[in-house]
Length: 171
View 1 (cartoon, rainbow, N blue to C red):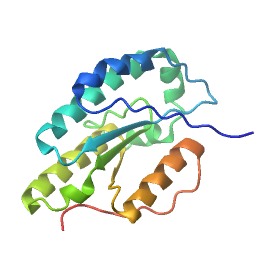
View 2 (view 1 turned 90 degrees about the vertical axis):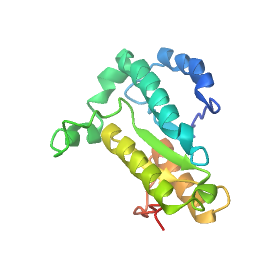
View 3 (view 1 turned 45 degrees about the vertical axis):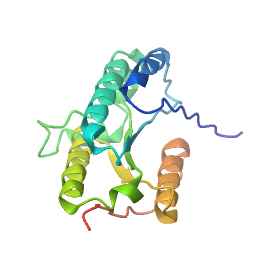
View 4 (view 1 turned 60 degrees about the horizontal axis):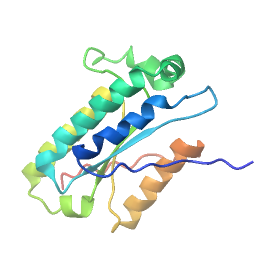
């Protein structure tokens, strides 16, 4: 028996947000898995926060209204540990596993250090308060491509995940 992973790309910009409504009809059984991957364009810092916040709010509303997601939510390990965290008042863990990917890292790394620092702090904050994984991606960097592929394989097929590499974008 082969495992299958379905990937849907909605496109960029909040104009594609209405397509997200399709996810409200998904039924997640105990055997199924669902991970939301949100790719954020690091070359468009002016719209980074707005797009991330808009998409996260829309998907949060969709998944929190889905009965099968609410039932399955208690089985996620990271939901149980969030209650013990010192920032538990800030953390509102996302209803399904969430990966935030900062795309076009090759363009981002050439920006001035202060802009990069602020953008990375914002992304880290979003990841932290949503209980998400955060990574950076560039199709031009073989190491980042491999890391992205490894993380997607881990979430899709429960494959082994090597220890994380910290790429903070501040150099």
